[in-house]
Amino acid sequence: MKKIYSVDKSFDNMRIDRWVRKKLGKLPQGFIEKKLRNGQIKVNNKKIKSSYKIKTNEQIEIFSFDFKIMKKQEQKKFNPNKHVIKSNEDLIIDNNDNFVVINKKSGISVQGGTKSKKNLIDIFSKSEIFENSKPFSVHRLDKDTSGVFVIAKNRETAQLLTTLFRLRKVYKTYLGICHGEISKNSGEWNSDLIRYENNKQITESAKTLYKVLDKNSICSLIEMKPITGRKHQLRKQLYSIGHPLYGDQKYNLGIKNKGINKNLMLHAYQIKFMINDKKFTYKALLPEYFKKLLKIKKLNFLDS
Image (cartoon, rainbow, N blue to C red; front, side, top):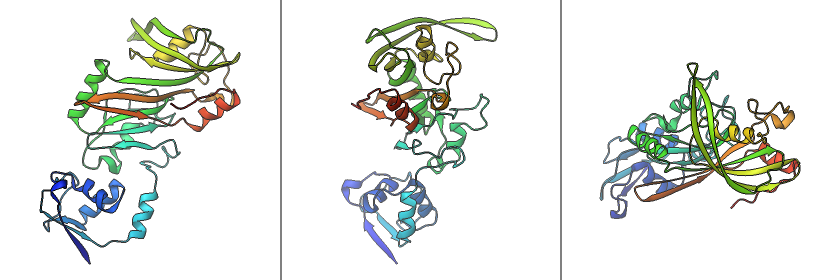
């Protein structure tokens, strides 16, 4: 049994996978891809790919399939590797033709070159989202930092986003919980940060705008907007002013982190950028351990 639809003019040049969602609801991309491969969704009696753009008056055939299975598929959370990404913090924030935005879990490296056995780019390269493309990393996020992260789906978008980052046209906001009470409630940090590359000392200027959202005599909740993008910039700057982040195993002034405090309390909360005059803004929900420490330390965070 099958249903046949004639493409309305309003859907002209729309991708077939988007059209299917318009007609059948928010189905998982992998589910649609499978039906296209199996020929259970055809255009003009031909198999097509999910990227195919339909034309006015074309005939779309949808063969009946098990909607119970479909509902179960729809309810599944994104889980490219259940042994590595398995918590509710690992959610797809957006998935479009050109890039994917995720809420990265702490403890996963973005790409190879670290001691980690698994990294985000390798994991996504095996996922259904990149079945007809490949993931491109366009920016960095420390292994133990959680939060919003963008992965390009094609080389053109990767080059564009990389350029936006280089030109400082991507605006990121981080949240952190640090030791001690920061006296000044807002301002900017201008630092010369030192790093070493092949035993050569490199000094880089770093600038961050900050705002204290809440604080007490023990700790502070701070919002940080880096203007530059130096390695470990926020962690180093907080360390240099005597207020290291909870859970920072490297920049910690000898402070011991026990229990929940072993988690690095640094979260990439928001990212903003513009492509072809269209504004994109994404937020990543706070991980549970971050919210738990806020409660323990009696710090308030009001999501704007």
